[in-house]
Structures are given as structure tokens and as C-alpha cells.
Image (tube, rainbow, N blue to C red; front, side, top):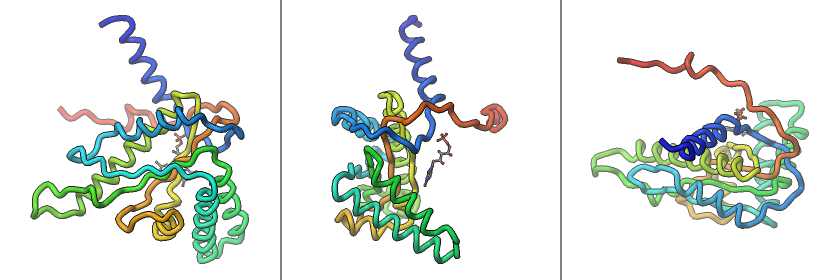
Length: 206
Ligand SMILES: Cc1cc2nc3c(=O)[nH]c(=O)nc-3n(C[C@H](O)[C@H](O)[C@H](O)COP(=O)(O)O)c2cc1C
């Protein structure tokens, strides 16, 4: 094995080991060519039968504000329903995160692209696999962002108000919003989160 290959391998592992969620960003615009690279990394993810059942939407301008309002309203309703005394503060904080994120990418499942393996097979498993592949696409994007000197965070918010998100972004009925990635230049560098030890949660069965 050549030295160069070893170094790429080490760099790749280092990239994976040092990624962490970042929620505060500099007010710096991300060049479009970097956005393209992140989107391409998402599109390279594995998917069931290579169906690539995803839709990526870069949300900016007035759409970003509308999405922020919509996610806030949904979150506020939920918090109020649960009698949270800090509902307004929390909802406002979530809204600020959305509208201030330098780059927002919504990852959705496009149900029209799912393919049952055999006619008798239930769509349910295909749907699960589709969502699993979206998660792979999201992680690819976060790693690509990290590689490019950016950072980001995964937000589950769209999952809780899919109808609203579809409506505000005028997405087709078959599009299921799942993941919102907020990405930007990190405000400060942070150490990776503490993780469970891999050798304590992994088993070998021989
Ligand atoms: C499925 C999923 C949903 C998540 N939802 C949110 C979210 O709604 N808001 C948020 O701030 N972080 C969210 N995160 C990020 C996690 O909080 C974060 O990955 C976790 O704390 C571990 O930190 P790390 O990413 O720095 O390793 C989510 C992550 C995953 C995988």
C-alpha cells in the first residue's frame, strides 16, 4: 500500500472522527461551488436498488423566512399543547436558528421513486429504506461540509410538520420533508462530542 493511500485513509477517518454538530455560524455567505459540492456528496449516498429517492432543496431568500415562520408556528403549538412555560422563548430561538442559518438544505423523501422489489412486497420496508438512505445522504453532506471548512447541524423539525413545509415551499404531495441541515462557517472551533466507546457497543459473533 502506498504512503499516499495511507494518508488519504487517515485523513478520511480523521474527518469522520472530528465532525460535530455546530449550531452557531459566522455571518458569511457560502460560495455556490461549495454548496454544489455538498449537494453532490448527498447525491452519492447509497440507496435501495439505487433508486436515489430523494429531493434536496436549498432554501433561501423569502422561502427561508416562510419556512422559519412555519417551523416556529408548529413548534409553538406543540410546546403550548404541552403547557411549556417557555414556549415563546423556545419557538423564537428555533425561528432565529432557521432564518440565520447561512445555508439551509431540506432533504425529503420522494415517494414516487420508491420501488417495491416484488409485487407482493409491502411498500413499508421500501419506505423505511428510503428514509435510511436520506440519513446516509445527510451524513455525507455534513461530512463534505466539515471537509470544506464548514460545519452544520441536523434538524428534525420538518418531520413534525410535513404538510406545512410542503405547503410553504410548494412541494408535491409525494414529497416527504424529513431533515433540515443548517450549514455555515462555525463561529468557533469545538471539540467533538464524547461518544460511547465503539468497543463497548460492538460485538463480534464468530
Ligand atoms: C435524527 C437526528 C435528529 C436530530 N435532530 C436535531 C434537532 O432537531 N435539533 C438539533 O439541534 N440537533 C439535532 N440533531 C443533532 C444531534 O443533537 C447531535 O447529532 C448529537 O447531539 C450528537 O452530537 P454530534 O453531532 O456533535 O456528534 C439530530 C441528529 C439526528 C441524527
